[in-house]
Length: 155
Image 1 (cartoon, rainbow, N blue to C red):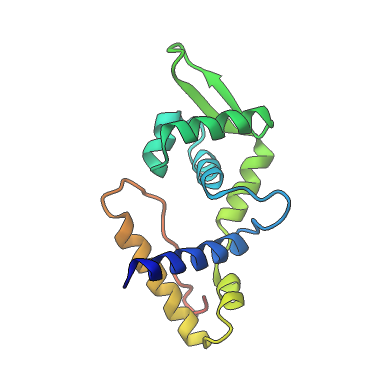
Image 2: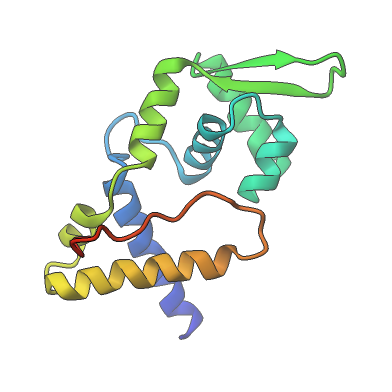
């Protein structure tokens, strides 16, 4: 695989992910924001350092996203005794919305973007994407589970 092919694949996967999460309307957030919000939704009370460690994003970017989301009322920031540390939590409605979007199945979005593939090929594609995800996350400390294919084989 050439680098240019990888970039095209990444772009297509981003489009599928945006569709699968419903992240397409006026309330759309960018990939960094989505990563931070999902991380905080799954790990309430996290610090910026915790989020940086789990997402791989730059500390400065995570801090900017956290402060912007706090200013918008999407999350709360609680200062600890050590003033350099903040504990971050999402507002309940934001947490529910983020987790619902993040946990959406990708089958329909993949079908929308791959009308030329058969059902069998889409199931295989999802299995390969899951395997790639697991391989690429080895040793990263990312313990987010990778969902399985349902017993009936549907994507």
